Image 1 (cartoon, rainbow, N blue to C red):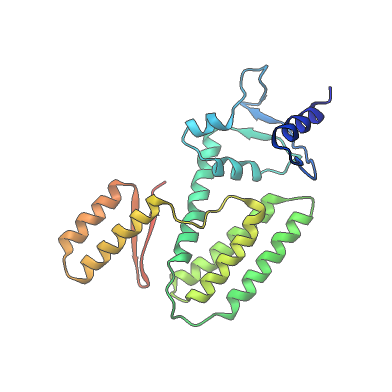
Image 2 (tube, one colour):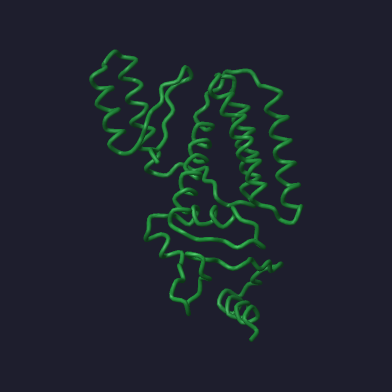
Length: 232
């Protein structure tokens, strides 16, 4: 039965465009150690994952975490772990975007970005080992977070790191660089809280902090300014 031929014919008839240039088939997906299939009644769709509260980005990150020739074991718990990982990445991107100008450029940042991108590409060319390529993203995250904590990262270096992440994301497709409406609202509340603290209106600052906490947002007051993240 020409299963894949039929899939190509259906998609190209529907879209009028070439489906893919290269077809790379992955191993089977398992649920509770049983093969996922419609016949077994344990098939899970993207809509099912969204109904559980997981975004398509979370599902994509989950799928990228295992080599295509290895069995993939699905569970909501595993998606929950990937959601926490994605939140960490989103926090990193947002913190980079909030870095002010002023600090001198650090030569090590340019070197680290170049090294991370080179290793990222090497992992992909080595039998499409995306999970190892992802490890380079987190290696860069840890290195840059240390600089952020020591206030050694300026706007130019932050932009360089963001550019590196955007290049990596052309393959990964899981990062977001545009603030959503909810994030903009949080940014506004955080800015209002910071202004209230500067003005000595500490009751108002506490009220805004409580409002943020009630919305699942934690604010960290650092020497370089407030940083916020969503509670897991």
